[in-house]
Image (cartoon, rainbow, N blue to C red; front, side, top):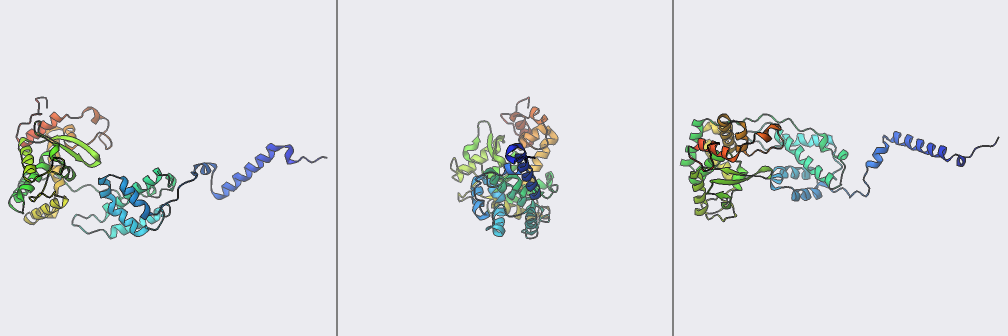
Length: 350
């Protein structure tokens, strides 16, 4: 009998090779798909100390402000390590450390917010690393770590009597009552965030239509109605304190632009005169809650949503918000009712 050589049946030999390769992959815990998923010529993975500045320079100012301190903490602990080295368990360990070493504040909630922001900061960092081809989605440890569940906010609308007391204290104490009362009126009328007020410029004022251009978080931009009284005061403030047309509008008496520290000092001072303000940690964002609550109760959800400057994307408003979007005339009508002053854009339909 003549023996058959492997060369006589090349298909059989090839199948044997394939079976051997599959057996080896199985023993290694891999699949053929894993081999094709590995990118070729991947760049060297940098350390956190090397890569954090790259991402910090690529994100927006608001994102850098929110995540900067957490990226610094990551560099402090893992600066010399490569991005692909930490495991999900090590991220959870760092979360525990951040929670227990958070700066103690009166409104602290056990470090939950710090842990949440740490995970968000790492997800942002690793998302950029994926986009740059430094790691794959499967190698991203931050996406395997759940954020702490956010607790309901303790903020709520401020009663009318308490709001009047807050304005009274601002107008009768401090080194610049004119500035402080202007801040409170601006936030009460527009329900803007601190960032929107600080970004306001003289060039953003439209006195003919009594509108101000607000630029807030998420790079949102909107024209917001204001009363004639507030518009006149904003123009006067910019002229008296020599604000350049494209520079910051809100300034100290010596012409320096104010920062968020002015708000901190304002509420600290008000809290010394009104203990409940200090105890409940009432802040500028409570003013936003107050105005938007009033608008929603009197003019409905769609107008309140437009008044707040909320976009149609994301959130839980649903597709209906696209069809019931309120106009600037309706927002102006709500403002007119709030202030008791006529507004040029508050049409009868509004």
